[in-house]
Amino acid sequence: MEAARNRNTWHIHPDTAALAQRLAAAIARMAQEAIAARGAFHLVVAGGNTPRAAYAMLPQLGRDWQCWHLYHGDERCLPPQDPERNSLMLDTVWLSQVPIPARQIHHIPAERGAEVAARDYAAVLPPHAFDLVLLGMGEDGHTASLFPGHDWGLEKSSPATLAIHDAAKAPPQRVSLSGWRLQYTREMFFLTTGSGKRVALAAWLRGESIPAALVGTAADVWLDNAAWPEAVPGAI
Ligand SMILES: O=C1O[C@H](COP(=O)(O)O)[C@@H](O)[C@H](O)[C@H]1O
Image (cartoon, rainbow, N blue to C red; front, side, top):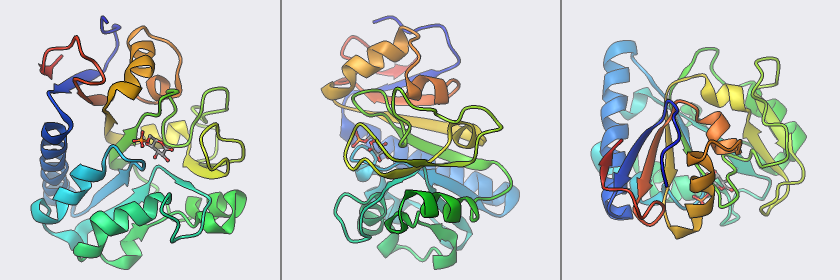
């Protein structure tokens, strides 16, 4: 595969363990820089399986937890204790072990249903840019809960949050930050690992209009060799 000409930086890692370690260190470093510069770190987290190992390392690497503010890129409309909830994964591997003030952890109240949760979540978003947005990519190229064939809310006239009713991946009801709100950030990292992501990654590298590519036009993309076997570890 040849990288399409775009504004992405591709960080290739030999395996998921190496990626998780560097990613967790990068998040902790960026938090310290943001806190030193502005007194707070506003982070949007990705759901799914890919970021789990990095999140689990953060309790050891992070500091100044009282300055962290957490948001989700998306959530699935399921009860809070459902194992498929992004918030439950985050609580289990990371948040239950660190003293981030509860009022600064903005889980999406997706158990209220997509429309109500999207409205309520919009009300807690900051008026300023996020410091860092973490995103994953599904096998079909979706990111957050922005799926192929849907409106991804890339226009500034779109709402900041979208109620999703027919997602191609279960559950069909979800809430997502819109494309432009995800892009309103100082930095964006995409996390993509495993051979299951090869087809979507190849489409991105060819310049196809998949949701991940259009949201992540200028993102740093963190990959392992299983997702891009031909790539030599390093940054391109
Ligand atoms: O449904 C979702 O999928 C993407 C990718 O998940 P992964 O398990 O392949 O890492 C994820 O980024 C998103 O937050 C999630 O809700």
